[in-house]
Length: 360
Image (cartoon, rainbow, N blue to C red; front, side, top):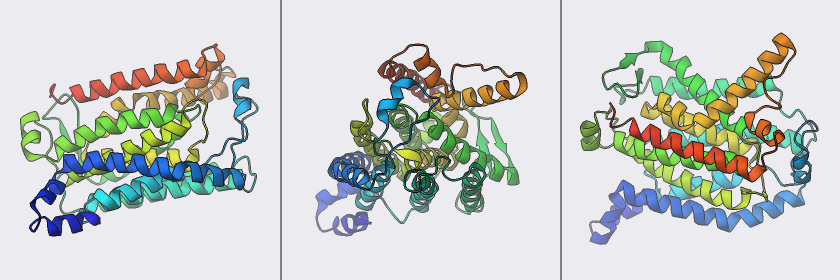
């Protein structure tokens, strides 16, 4: 919103012209979100401790996690606040996609907040029942998808773009709505499943959003999109600023969530971040690329599906424990080693996703 003030006065004071550039605002959006996180995090963590908003540890989990009992949770509110404040400073709110991303972030975060509230305050170990939790996610994602489907300013609202092949564009028509719902809900829950050890999920989110930010900027830039032969999506370049804010908030939160964690993000953080990544992929037509750059999230989800399916069908487990990061913990890997190796894998996948630009 303050972007409007900068933009209004730049004709009177030429140095303010720099605020027109997305790259400039994206960088400062990251720095602003980082600063806001550092300012509010200690206060929020102290408040969460005061009201006993603490994490419950599973009895069947790794024994090393028992020491985490009592750690404040719902720290995802720190991330959401930091992103929103940063966007107020640097975002162009005339752009409809900015509003969609913020609504997605807060909407999915609200579902997670309800779940965390029931677990921590009401002492309900189950939290929000799975069928209601998933149902709300599907309902919210459907509303977003219908809006995007009916967007008259998007000539590719029903198009699925396939990486590596510049001419592989599939018009899904009305079926793009259920497809985009699947992407949003799947991404939201994938991040949620990955958020099981200190710093793992937020570090991978930072990696994924950095790569997606680069892809978003290129897709929203007419000349770069033409040169790289990717879909040019007018207006989406502004979402690079959102990616910058999310990246800065993720780095700031990682400061407090790194091993040993001072605070957990909770479902309010994991569902909001996953939902935002999924929504970003749908808007920018990088749904398949999201599965690459977020490959660790995909593997974590598949490990849970395999574990449940195997146990129900054969009575045997594929892994010592799912999601798969717990499997490696139970094999004897120290938690920091699991985190670092998964991050390394995430960086490799992010680089591979960027490489798809020049292979089309």
